Image (cartoon, rainbow, N blue to C red; front, side, top):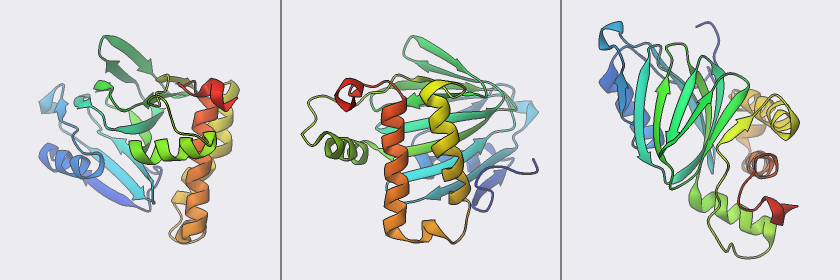
Amino acid sequence: MSSTPLDRFPLLRSADVEHTREVIYHFVHRHPIDLVRPDDGLDAYINGRRLDRIGAAYLSFGAEARTTPGELDFYLLQVVLSGSYTVWLGDREIGARPGSAVVLSPGDDVRTWWSADCGLLCFKVGAADYQEHLAGLLARPMRERLRFEPEMDLLSGSGRDLNVGIIRPLTQRLNQVFGLVAHSVLVQQLEDTLLTGLLLAQPNTYSSALG
């Protein structure tokens, strides 16, 4: 794989399943991984960077795999860059390919399937951080938990605007060792841009209140 997002911040390249499990556990907490065909072996890539409220990572297992994260306690935007990705939220099945994304919310009970060539760009934010950001936009306390519609189209409409105008340039900036992301004030602005952009682009429980 010649070039991957966030490749200046490699966290893992491994053929060892247990080592890969340990690194993912450290980065996104519980995330059990099982190979569909263990004899195929693993060629896992993980690149990642943590800012203040947001963690960004690129993940690819290089083998057909299933994961069972269970119930989440954070928000997760997963952009499919290659291959096929399937998520089950309870009884609901969501299939995603390049040009689409999945937005997971706290309380979702998650199972996933990855094709051997699947690669995801992920942005993780804690529930308390996102809810505090939203409360600031609303200028009032939240009355119910923020939840997103999980299926997201990145090829048209507001999803395309988010992808082209925010996600791609943010990913490029995050791959810089120095520059804007070295300054705390500018990091907060970058994070605010992504958090607000996702709220405006993707249907959620506060879409009407945000206008």
